[in-house]
Image (cartoon, rainbow over all chains, first blue to last red):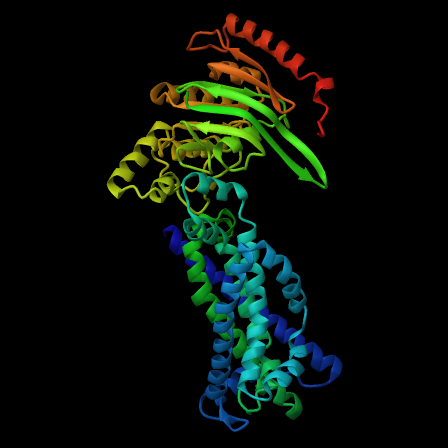
Length: 270
Length: 256
């Protein structure tokens, strides 16, 4: 077996182990809750059964599960894409201009502390009930970590790397494209990743203001009132699955391209 | 004469107080000369090199390089930093090629030069390694190769081997002498080690309190042997002189 095969095999084993741990913790929690509180906590197999039923055509709150998933995915994708575009440009600007950074960084740090739910009144006041408000909430939760980490990535490039490039004849454009940006790339990736997670986390709050009875977040809100806990677990599982898929497909691929350059990530990959 | 410093002054204000790092310093460097700048920490030797490199503005005076004042950084003056100044995401090859790419050198010519200078510093076989896979000494060699590849007219070296262990440092000193023997480049070498200055330099200037206190032409013929009696004798004499120049009472920081 060569090194890559070995790595793949061991990462499969690792993944299986993680899955088993989650299942064991779930079963233990369910058993404990039933024993101590006497209420029925959905078992993993109940949730799986429900998922199968939903996938084979059962509707939930008058929509197919696929519709719920797709509409959430669409809102998330829209908000996140906007956040990536705005966040990267804003972060790069802050990283390059120390005046702008001094002015705006404290503001972004403050905004970063606002919890997702607290954006509801603001989103409602500014945009009214509707998709715009939802997209805004996803956007704002994703954009802040992207801005902060992109700016920090640029600001923490060692001065000696900049000066060495200047001595070797780099003009401003070359300095940015060939030194500052690649040097900041790892920090930028961290920001994109945190932004992605933030966008998913705010989904439930964001779908409270959408005004349409469709979406994974909406299922969770609704299920709380109808005591349909299995359905909320299905929605939660789908949110996690989407996040995981995106993480594996997008970030792992991106990081693999950047990784050999950075000793820390390379070590963790071994 | 390749470089002339006339009344160079560098001062900066820190918390409302004016600190003069270099005060009315004058110095002439001949083409092909290996000049060592010796001084205790904080004497302004790094600042002096940074001014010559064009990385810092002058407060007063003039720096004339090849008959023209220094307006800013230029790849005609190469600088080797004490810190690790390589790009961690680039391989050894890419690090050495970077300056040539910036200069717009054609690919074929570039590859030849990169190969030549990697070989010159003895790093063939490590072209595809990244900096974090190399030892400190090897990383400094990459810095040297990358700088030499641009054929600078002067090489500014800021305690390039100070962070290395003693044995590696001696080997690097000797390799630098070999390279200098081949290229006959003008070198300004900053160090705080008397022995290193004595092994390398045609001339040693001692910097303290922001000005040159002493200029000493090394009488030893090359190649110099650190183990020889004449070297030891010269080293002893110079260390005594260095200690006198940099005596503690003279080291009071000036606030002008």
